[in-house]
Image (cartoon, rainbow, N blue to C red; front, side, top):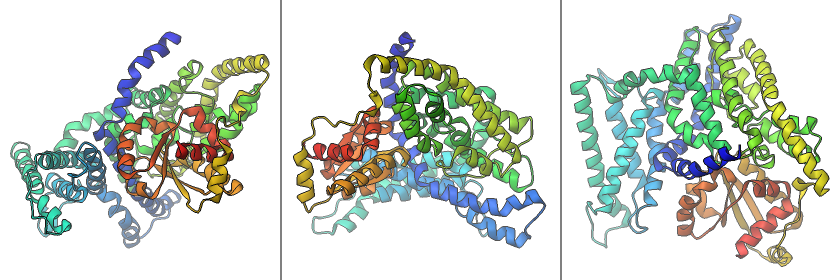
Length: 553
């Protein structure tokens, strides 16, 4: 096992670099900003079609009213993604550009949007088609974003712009500066569209769907699901946020599958597509990556080690809501040889059980999109359209996860118990914050200025743990500190409002990227390690002192 871990250490830098790839990050962050659209629209579908299960059907007029919010939100997902992805991609490109010669993100967003329309719509009498404005147009949206962004970068970098005299107001000067790159982008999209239609006879968006159709079957196969969710767990096990690598590669397929399931559900047919966003969140990664939903309960109820019991009690609530960093780093599970096998195998078996229930027993797959923080068993029940079989399925999945983790948990608990007997102390319950100058706390109390802290993680859940601890510690001690939780990718616009930015362990590998942003603004950037972060979330007073010490450096 040690040899395996040494081999993993050698390849980790490559995957860390891959997770920071600006194209993948732009897609991931673009999707993150569309979550309100995805979740909100699903609520109307549940109201519109769940009554069908009980034999009640709305009138056609009422059905049209109830589904209109979905059609005008999820039905435009590709169009929206051409904007949100362009926003984040431009931010990544600007880190490579001189401070005094930045790319106009708004202009790139417009160019990407128009480019997406070139690549996705057909003109019909009285208007345009909308078949590929939704999830089926996602890949076209990414293509339009990356083409527009790179054309803007090349134009701005080579000063291929219209320059106005210094006397011209900046907003007018910027508009003229964008004319050439905007025109080149549209010219490029126009040429691509003509070529595709000449040789294929359809829009690029439609051609792509036809071309990649075999990937949908491959992704939903037994081997495909094992590869997708096994890889996600593997990356997290070696310390890299797995969804950051895997999700950008499968999101287009997942959302198209989701749309196909919804269409089947609306038509009263069997929804069979397996790989959807909620499949990962409520089945494969039940309780968080590694299918850790059952692990804190095992630590809390079955452990003989005092340390493991303490970790279980601290982690059980956040893990139940899909925030599993307390158990990942507090256990720890990641980079812990004992847990490597169950951490990767449990998600695969979970999704295989789900696939069996859908394809053999006839249960509907995911037909609604629920927030990822919904407790897994509840989320699966709602997302499958309140399918009664989903309750049995979740009971089986939980039982299987317990059986998979239990023998490895017993080995690990025995190891920790032996250490406790040798050391006669509780390693996990250290609360001493060494090297902290108490005078810093007194200075903060006396100061009129509030130190604003932004804690960032991948999805906003883990960052909330430390933000809450900081606010609690500040209230108890009287320190002038206020913290807010955020997610990496949706933080760019709010950075100037904060004095300190703290990166949770899951996004610490983005340190160099975000440091370019914080250095320009002039605020402090801090990254944390796994155990360090979890300790801070459990020690409000120590968390405040930690921030004050970083500000004093």
